Amino acid sequence: MSYCLAERSIDHVLLERGEIANSWRTERWDSLRLLTPNWQSRLPGFCYEGDEPDGYRTMPETIAFIDQYARVISAPVQTNTTVTSVRGGDGEGYVVDTDQGEWRCRTVVLAAGACNIPSVPKFADALPSGIATLTPNDYRNPDQLAAGGVMIVGAAATGTQLAHEIHRSGRLVTLSVGEHIRAPRVYRGRDLEWWMDVAGVHDERYDEIDDIVRARRIPSLQLTGTPERSTLDLNTLTGMGVKLVGRLAGINDGKAQFSGTLRNMCKMSDLKMGRLLNTIDEWASENGFDSEVAPPHRLAPTEVEESPPLGMDLTNGEIKTVIWATGYRPDYSWLDVPVLDRKGLIRHDGGVVDASPGMYLMGMQFLRRRKSALIDGAGDDARDLSGHLASYLEG
Amino acid sequence: MTGSDKTVDNGVNVEALLGAREVLEEAPEAGQFQWRASCEWKNGTHSHTSVEKYFGFGEEQSHKTEFSYDADHPELFAAEDNGATPVEYVLVGLASCLTAGVAAVAQHRNIQLNSVTATLEGGMDVRGILGMDADIRNGFDGIKVTYKIDADADREDIEALVAQSQKRSAVYDMIANPTNVTVEVE
Image (cartoon, rainbow over all chains, first blue to last red; front, side, top):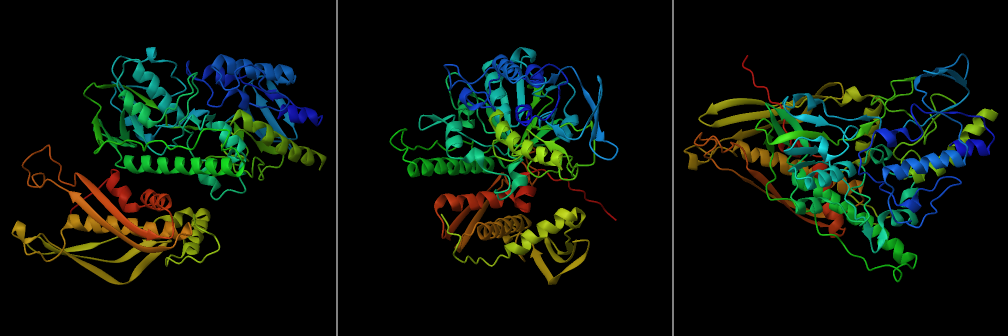
């Protein structure tokens, strides 16, 4: 957004509570790599020029990448500045209070992200006191964990990656699985992200999709970025010895209660993956790609044991740690403008906060396009929204 | 795949359902429903349960008529077999809920259904209800539902219909997930 605003000669400042790329520096586990390949992080005026376009950035590489972009575009970042309040000004515009003083502006772009606070179910309080709990924000590596069993709740990208790493550390992992999106890392010899990019899946717009509310709630694909470019699905985890159970539905008298829906969750995920691969195959045929890539194939159905357990005793000492990989929500405790809906999310039309002229939102799931929450999605959204912002300033 | 130009009629008024969604978006409190049943003991294991009134869209509602159901145990259990067993009513509830869902989802997805049949099997070790072994639960140890569906759609689309109907089913949810049950005596 800063690049696009500078292109339009619009004065602006970026307020950052810590250092540049703060959440990448402070809220990620050690082994994490981006889920998207290096070539895919295309920012306005900046792209990958190294010799590993198909690799996946480690966290230090991601931080360096964002740092470098800020330098290259001379982004006016004011670091170590925590915003304490954004409120309406007298008449028009906004007052932004920070621990480094007050700013007044005609427009404001909220780019604090979607993943500020880990979402933990209400019944987490009912866990027996001897069990340690962690969220992905606190987790760094398996050495943090007591020896013994670990229950990971949630099977999107975070839950499956942590299950893989922690099980390999010699701790028995139970993975509680609700709705999830299965996806092969590489399909027909190309990265799945490459297919979603060329076939236009990532460019699907928020105003052209059937049910945008649902699309914005879809969990992250079960992808992982590894040098081997391997697929990490539930079959991989089952093969290692990870125990799959249904969605954690409650905790009662020290007993975890699992939903009996595991079979349907896995079936739905297999069907959805099949549809995505069909879309890719159709695109490949229609665009003459069939001869350039490997032939179509399908993954074996997700294996679910005959009668997955419906409960688990949490008091017998087998489970020492529970990790809540149950998603995130944004933190708007500093937003003193009435733009939130019943669920505490900002009402917006593709990032334009209608109810509060001059306010914009970025970096949220499916904000304007399927790719909006990716680094690669920021550019197109910033081009659109900076255009809207410029028109607004011109009156 | 299904074409969007043909007329699909599964007898489901999808527009009305989508309209209800829009109304409830504006007035979420109207979404609070209460379903009721009244049961009267007859004799032995035979009881008679009826449903008529319910609450929804902010006011008292009523079925077109009162529906009633006899429940009993079979002669194998030295009962008179005046009706289905209560656990079979659970299968009735699950079957009809999922099947209604299949029809609604098919209509929404523009898939014409020609025939839909389901068979349900609920396994149970009756030593549980007879109190013979505390490790055996009273209820079903599992329920298997098998659909046979003839529709103008390919197999993947039909499987997706059945999967989605489970996702949106009230009875499936109540069986698959814990539900608090409070029983009091007046």
